[in-house]
Image (tube, rainbow, N blue to C red):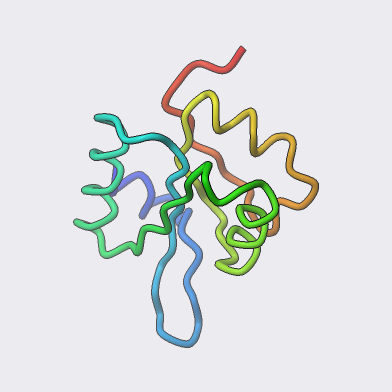
Length: 99
């Protein structure tokens, strides 16, 4: 998974510190853990997103981080779809099948 992220250049590279950012917006589950480890092994900084932040704060965090890629569950993918502003988010990797 980490190699796929790297080969496709899916992480946003923050210019000042050189951090490469990937978001995870899902409840804790096995896939969350695997995504986190894949990012850690390839030197990506994970930006975790939580439902408790609220819609406006989630939009703000995605925009502030200039996040381009986010791992999501089926439920959270539906939430992101309803956001008015998605910032620079262009790739969503979903753990579940989306109807």
